[in-house]
Length: 186
Image (cartoon, rainbow, N blue to C red):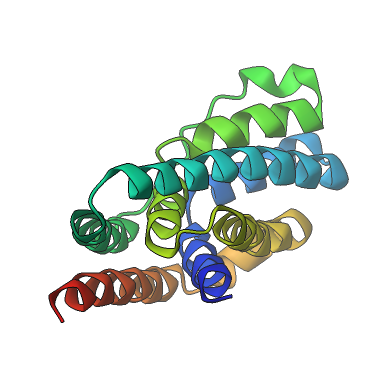
């Protein structure tokens, strides 16, 4: 369960103010089909994060465990620091004609490629050796951060202390990363 809760907390915090959250706001404003957008987020995130967790597990099986833990710890710290850099909303709106579900599925999947939350999922799966629990935690983390945006949209984003949340997410990732590195030295 540690892998589930670490993934849930880390990904949820990392998602606050992330480009996919801005994408969610954009999709709701343009398409106004909440259930289709939510379903698109669920399916695209589940596919993306299952693949990411599998990749993390694969790396863990083929790379020396001590080296993998060192790489994972340093990378988690790097992701933590990366969270401090705000994302820009640079998504294309060309797919809007395909309907809310397909548009969300494609745009959200593409936005997650190379995103902090995807990389975090790879690293957390490598650390915890659990594809299922890390995937479930990371998908739920993305949903916890995005479902309020679907329903309350701009009002929430204006009132959230995004800078404070970014700092908290940075701390969470850095602590997990530092603990991973330090535990290798003990």
